[in-house]
Image 1: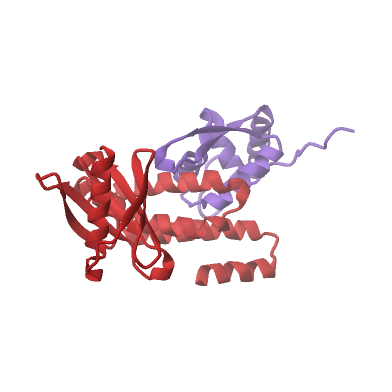
Image 2 (image 1 turned 30 degrees about the horizontal axis):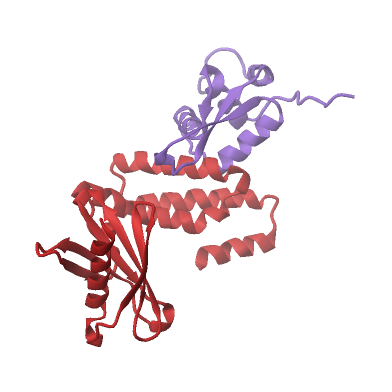
Length: 193
Length: 110
């Protein structure tokens, strides 16, 4: 993608995002390559700078444009799926409140695989510090491998979550031996919050 | 003076784990499944690794870090292998059980 085309794309995405402002006073300050994507900095009239990420998405032969406004502006991130309109310009699909890569998985089976994963992964991400450090890598790896096997056997997501909670809690209890009430209180606190 | 060796027979859990490892090295999840198959009781992974660590400290097992794969979230496996001391401990367990049990099959009304 050449610079002019990128600049055009960024301008179109910013215009669409801030269409309610009825202004076209945007300045694309810089566009630089970042791995297989691009990052643009755009000046907007309110004196803020926008960060615009353009990510190539080979599986759809397309790109995704994400706009992050500074926190002070209170704008939520916006994501666009642009496509060439045939006249050298860009037509945008969206906006999405979430990243289109997450919104449009490659196939239905992919979505089925990813969605259930997320909940168990969230539990593991939240509670993995409860597992004693010296065993954390082995236990986390075994748990993930076990979850994949159980899922293939047709266990429900609820059962998997319960199983993960139980395993992590038990690992934490092992860590607390010999009994230390301050640590026990900490464990209860972590489980509640 | 050298380190005093643990000469008392190992506990039942230790003995089952040692027996599982007689056929070759295994990693935690395999050991857990094998234990469950042999005894019919579940062994949480947290308990398993603490027990295995103690067995490694006692010189009955050795461990090595294995490979990782995406299914494990990039975490490696840890493989355990029985040592000569582990086999001795298993023999002691077998002898201790044989010493307290009468020979032959038990029946009701004895």
